Length: 256
Ligand code: GN1
Ligand code: CA
Ligand code: CA
Image (cartoon, rainbow, N blue to C red; front, side, top):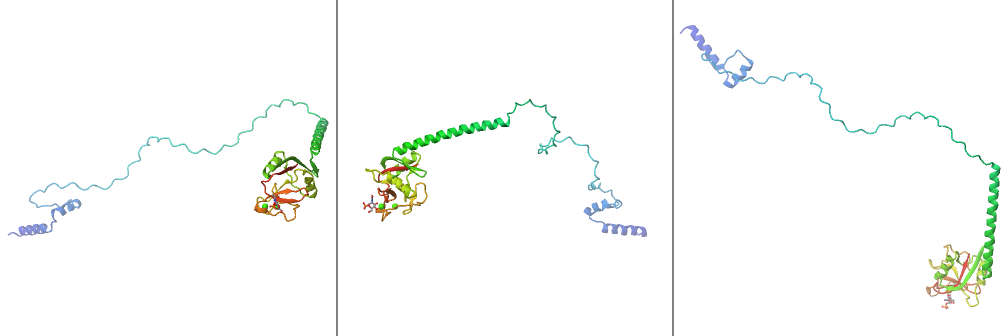
């Protein structure tokens, strides 16, 4: 065998031994355009499509888009600055002629005299009414007038009768007033209710106005709350007091 032929056979053997399998041949063809697969005796099949290339550079900026939709209404803005002052108006019409201070004083004096006259008239009428009450048996003591209607009622009705007349059930605050009430007792009706009771707290006697009593003229041994049923007070014809049941009927005496 010729030396050149031996060299070709050895070289072919090395190439076949070192050639990668068909899969790896593809990888090599991507990176090495010179190496070809297969033998020199036949042309190989066309290679497969190459892999996708790397991402290209960023494109140019696009055209301006269409105008967007109108937005929602915003909150009200701050108040604006004060406007300029308006022009001065025309002068008003002339007023009526004023009265002199002297005339005003005369008016007041005249009104004062008229009021004084009216007060005197009222005073006269009040005195007349009081004379009528005294004529009918009323008793005047200090600033009070004690009057009886001559009737007997239970405590509650007696209190109502006096209130309806604009007064209170009589309640003496001192000996003089007690005597005035005592004088109103009658020959046939010798006991009268006083505007005093312990109906709310046993043993604690109060005026019908709610104050605790400041004067008393109890009979000996009274108040005894007899039979546990005596919360009202009567004045006897000797001026002494006794507690009795409120349901009993006694002379009605009011104070005004
Ligand atoms: C009277 O009647 P007699 O004795 O039960 C009086 C009481 C006196 C008591 C004094 C309704 O009760 O209030 O505390 O005498 N009862 C009436 O002895 O007047
Ligand atoms: Ca009592
Ligand atoms: Ca009694």
